Image: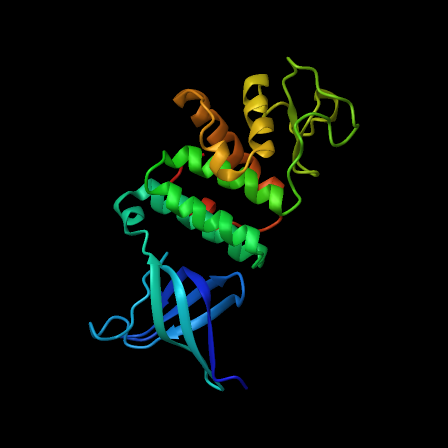
Length: 242
């Protein structure tokens, strides 16, 4: 067994396992998603610490008992996220989606770290919207917002879309299975259509009113459990009322 490994990674989950130790879940584009023990993380200032959302180049020691954190060259700590409950909730959702997808795709890693960076300075609702849009795009679950995915009919420019619970996507009125409870107006659809055409960072520069942004934010949170086939505890037990 290889005794040491190194790689770029970020802490996406941190759990206390003993009085002074923590179990870290790392997300790494080269090492995958892995669990690492951080001994004495709460006991000594001399101990190598890797708080939640710390990104860096991690040095790990592998043994029969598991993987242990040896050292870290820190790139970013994302400390500012912990000062605001809404930003914390956004970061929890991002981590939840990554963990549930079980994907260590480098493109997803870039999206995740870029979203955490953006959360420190940008409105949390806008960052959350763009993370969800681009996450679904990477996972192959995003519609193009131009044609009905069920009947293939092109959407009219002024058409209000319904939603298909079975397909997990916005659809035309005839294919709506939600009886009009999840509606997507033309302006919001145009915004989402433009978002999927742009990179995450480019999409953050799209101009939209705060009211429209909030409506799109709520729409995506309400439709996400249908669009993404996985249980999202951050939405079920989080602080957002959706």
